[in-house]
Image (cartoon, rainbow, N blue to C red; front, top):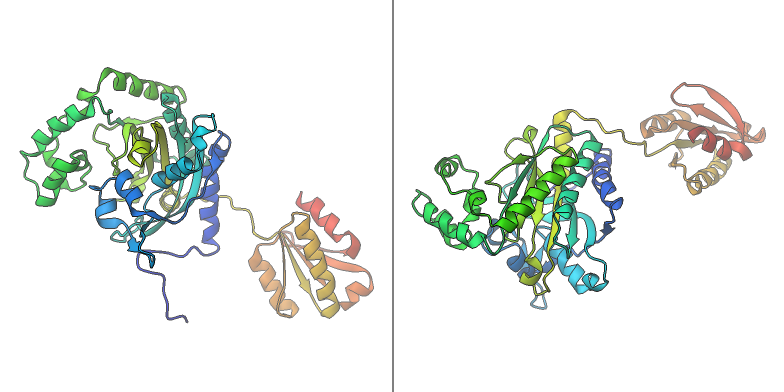
Length: 420
């Protein structure tokens, strides 16, 4: 037994459960691949300033949750707490926006890190699949991403999730609302830390989950009443496109999300079967983020969906994913000559695209057949000296229990045909 354990707030993905996480990632990525999104992968750590500027210095992510460190060379780096800032940085550095085909549509999958109080559904290391459409201001893009996420969840079999939708306005109308909200908040009974947020980013107070705060926010001014005509028209187009696609959503005027870079469209996917950590994903439009990190004006929109929480949501609904067996054929050799022959056949099967495994370690027939059962293989190929002398192997159907002799030279073709 090792004396080492996974760090607090983290987890290991181990078979067979890891297959479920892979299936969720593939299901989320599927609609993106079919919609023009190309895969991008960024480093696990970035310059601290990238997140301070992009995510926001007033956010909990930057002030409390980010894993920051100084390298031996004196660089100030941080493990990435979210994906959008890194993806946009990479797109700018790679000049993808200059290729002449906007929007630049990218998807990614990876691990992210935040120092939070660990609980079910909230970890210090977590996995997300995300998508970003960079360089175009178009309500159809906002709608597309919401529809693709809905499509991915439904393909997995999820039904009891809700989509919350709001508009945060833009640089024209939000400052007027911000001033009105600040005046309102200053009259409430709030702790010192929350009062500091009033001056830095008052919209974040609306996102406070504490009941004693929410009770005081009932009569807070609504951002919807302050939206300019352009933002109202933009938001209505997003709503109409989503509705026309048959995707249900709920308007939530207090939805602000936890990052400073959002403008106009913001949305969240929630699942009521997860308790307090009900958000399984979310995103929105971030038209000014490129300029915040030193790039040109590139209006953009994106989302990130939590793989961990999606798995929990599937479990809450009792959804069992149909996962393919990792092994279709299991070879059991009895004797040295059989080991040589069957190992060669297993290699042939793998080259032919058949998932095949082998009984290693020189086990006897009983122990090897136990391994074959545990592998989930549909067929087992057994061979001993007598079989090989006759030029055959024994092919056993693990579902029916039927067994037959098949010529050694024909076994690969026979298995390919039966597994087709």
